[in-house]
Amino acid sequence: MKPREREAPSRQPRVLFLSASVGEGHTAAAQAVCNALCATMPDCGCEVVDSYRYASEVFHHVVSNGYIGMVKVLPQLYGVIYDQAERATKVSGFKKWLHRYTALNLRQFVAQLAPDVVVCTHAFPCGVMAEYKREYADAPGVVGVVTDFVVHPFWIHRNIDAYAVATASIRNTMMARGVRPDRVTVTGIPIDSRFRLRPDRRAVRRALGLAPDRTTLLVMGGGVGIGPLEKAIAKIDRLTHDVQTVVVVGKNPPLQRRVASVARKLSHPVKVVGFVSNVFDYMQAADVLISKPGGLTSSEALAAELPMVMLKPLPGQEERNTLYLQEAGTGVRVQTARELSVVLDRLLSDEDALAAMRARARELARPDAARDVAAMIRRLMPS
Image 1 (cartoon, rainbow, N blue to C red):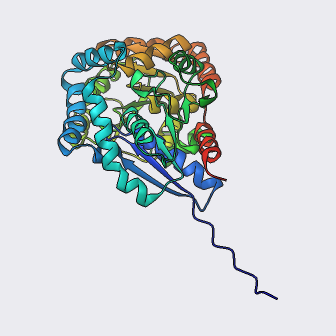
Image 2 (cartoon, one colour; image 1 turned 135 degrees about the vertical axis):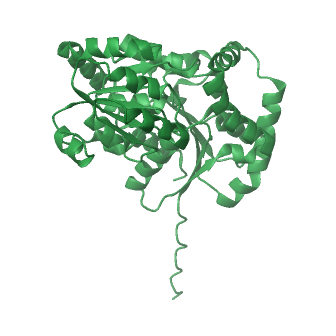
């Protein structure tokens, strides 16, 4: 009798996440999906990579640093560029070249890693992988995860295997532009799984060093610290309500020092922190969020059932996010810090209005988006 042959050990499933170094939200979305995958597939290997590393070095620095500088100093210019790109009916020659150049640079890395699926959480790597699939017959399946409440045309490619989007409206837009209906799934924007939890707010406040029974305002500057935060907390100090404020500055030490300096002169309690990994706790502790309406931040606020005051949104995707949240009844737009105290006084004096905003947030929230995107990825994996 022949000895029984041993079965070859099964290969560890691998997923490559391609993000982009323009803020923190795209990477946070990738990490949320990675965690959801590992929860159901403990042997799954995930790698999160900045796709700009494989573009030219000059382009990497110009885009990464230039984007942040432009939205801080010349936001209207960024808005014009965004609008023109949105209205364009053809892909520019430079963009085609850059996608192909980056796809060629990615070839060796992708071939060595041999991922079963590539997940793109930014429009740039989505375009790169669309080109990669045209160049190489052995390309893995590709998923695009749109991280705003609007989809820019740069996301849309007919050879991407699956898209996860925030709303039915985005799905309709993509189908109107030729993407097959079976390739677009409304999942919501993937966020940290802890937003599914409902801890006791008083206990969370105590754990954060806050007064448990005091109305709490959360001011956020995004992952890279953008916005008139010093002016905002100065205006909050004029409120007729007894409040405490937490300011999450992000990765911007000079801004953090300036905000802390202003905070020391104010009459109401202000806690100032930099970049934090437990945004969930701060949102659960708050009664109102004052922030720019980035896609991830807005989705987290919806999951935390946290009314938003959207402070000076940037032209482009933040402007579109603002319109969505306003129309949905979960947020109020404030264009200048000067308006902030008036709007907050009005909101804090009307518990019915706040309750209605919380209820609408609860209806729109998709705290399981990361889990649903993970399920899409698993379906694309070879059996």
